[in-house]
Image (cartoon, rainbow, N blue to C red; front, side):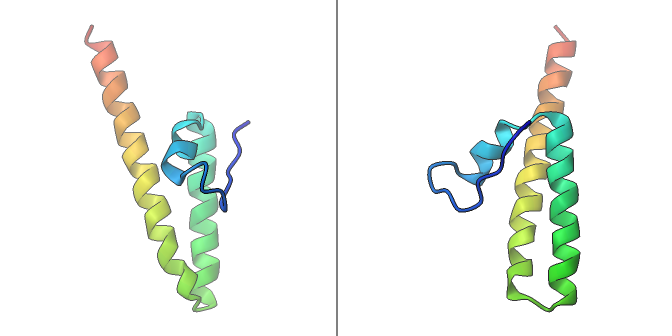
Length: 74
């Protein structure tokens, strides 16, 4: 199972996400969506950070999809 280290400068978010399996990545995305809804309801300024999570997750999913397409064309 993957692990997320939110306060670690040694493991940037992008690197952590690259090491997650597809199911773990989708679970992480689902969790960020849940937390974002809670932060928005509380009108927390931290809700802005969730957009960064979503951008990085979507970027990784697109990259994986492109890799699978390229591997399928070989």
